[in-house]
Each structure stands twice: as C-alpha cells, then as structure tokens.
Amino acid sequence: MFGLPKYIFKTLCALSLLLCKPVKTMPIFIETSATPVVVLHGVESSSEKMIPFCDWLSTSFNVKVFNIEIGNGEKTSLYTPLPKQLEELCATIYKIDELKEGFNFLGMSQGGLLARGYVEQCNQYPVKNLITLVTPHGGEFIKTVTTNFYTDFFQEHLSVAGYWRDPLVLTTYLFKCTYLPILNNEIKTDESAEQLEQISKLEHFIMIWSPYDTVLSPAESGKFSFYDEHLKVISLEDTDLYKNDLLGLKYLNEKGKLQTYETNCTHVDHRNPNCFPQLYPILLKYL
Image 1 (cartoon, rainbow, N blue to C red):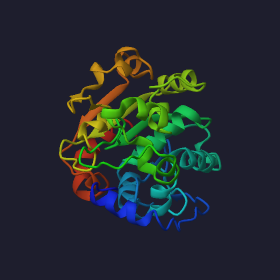
Image 2 (cartoon, rainbow, N blue to C red):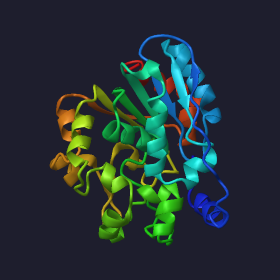
Image 3 (cartoon, rainbow, N blue to C red):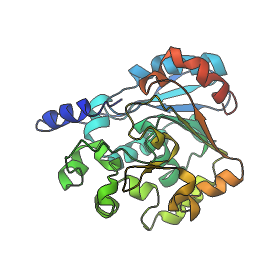
Image 4 (cartoon, rainbow, N blue to C red):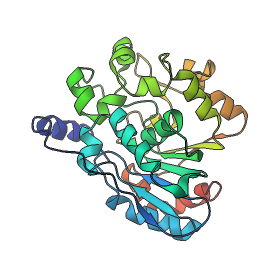
C-alpha cells in the first residue's frame, strides 16, 4: 500500500530512475471449490504480500483463489499508469479458463480501482460480486502536497496520479487525469454507456472502508465520498455522480445491490489476520 506523504517523497526520488520493467503477469492460485475468487493487491504491494489473506479466504470460504500480480508487483503497481495496468489485468484474466463462467473479484486499495476498471471496460469473464477494500473510489488528495500530478510525465509514470483528485482544480482533474474521471463517468466518453451498463449488471458491489484509514485521504473515499472545494467530505448520495446516476450506483442501491461496510482496521491491516474476524461476516454473505 502507499503511505502519503512519505510515499510521495519516495516516489519523487525514485521517478528519476524509472528502472522498473514490466514482466509477464502470472496468477498464483489456491485450489478449492465453488465460485472462484480473484484477488488483486494494491500499490507498492505484490501477490506475495496477499498470500495470508488468500490462504484465509480459501480455507474460510472453500473457494479457489487466484492471487494475481500485475507485472513485477511493487514497481509495476507504482510506476505503470493505471490504463496500462488495466490492459494487462484484463489479458491475464482472459488466460484463466476457470473464470469464464464468472467469478468474485476482491480488490485491495488501488487494486479495487483496477478491479472496477475490469468490470467497466472488460468483463468478458463476468464479475458476479465486486468487493473493494479501502479503495480510493472518490480519489486521493492531501492539501499539504503541492506537486502537480496532472502533467503528462506523472500521468504516464505514476499510478497514483491517475486518481489524484484535487478539488481546488477540478476542471484540470477532469480533463488531465487519465483514469479516475473516466472510470467514474465524470466526463462523457465513448465508453460511458458501456461502463454504466456493466456496473449495473453486478450482483453486488461491496465497499469496505475504515475511519481509521490514514492512507486514503479522505478515508471516506473508500465508500465513494470525496472532498468539495472547501475540503469538506461529500457523501456519495449528495454527489452529482449519484443523483444523476452517471455510473449506475443509484440503480444498484435502489435494488439493494450496493453495500457499504465499516471496519476499525488500519488501511494495510485489511489484508492481515488481525482484521479477518471483522471481514468474515461481511464476506460470508457474498463468497
């Protein structure tokens, strides 16, 4: 996971090198039964770090788990732009025949944005339940960070720039940010109607967030809330995105298919055993 602002400092120092080279994505899976589950790690993470979580899913819910890694994990998740990561994710999933009839997708942090991207823009192997854990659906913004992440350089070389949502320059975000405003249907594209349709097809869309999350800013971004121009958190229901149903979230909610759950775990702990007792009764309903 990423830890701003320390994460920003590390990123700015490392970007001058840009030594990472994507390698072939390989899924790691654990054999069991029932509807299969795909798990995707977050930024500055890897499939290896998700093994305890995947082992727990497999044994607790009797499911076959595919623990997918994008490229070489930590470096690719940080230095490869999200649109390119999404292309690789979709190609990887389409190589797994056992997913053809559908699967449940669990995305951790940034991995949740990619999982939702798969649903909206790929989904030939259909996702039944989309489950995101502490995922910045409403973007990431820290007012003490003054770097302009909307330059071509950052958009092309830093994954977090793809969901940096600065409410003080919202127009710039909408037209320069290359991932989140498109994914959220905040701007109209040729894919907007298809994205809405695919989200509406989900059996359930589950968002798990925590007020103790000090990585996401705001923490409520994990349930699709974000800052307004006064840096006050706007609830999902008060956004134009929801009221105008630009992405199908209102439709899902009215059908009882949009669910939000709160834990008291830290951001990273959602993949660790100390949070599993809180996650178990939630996931039991959908896996």
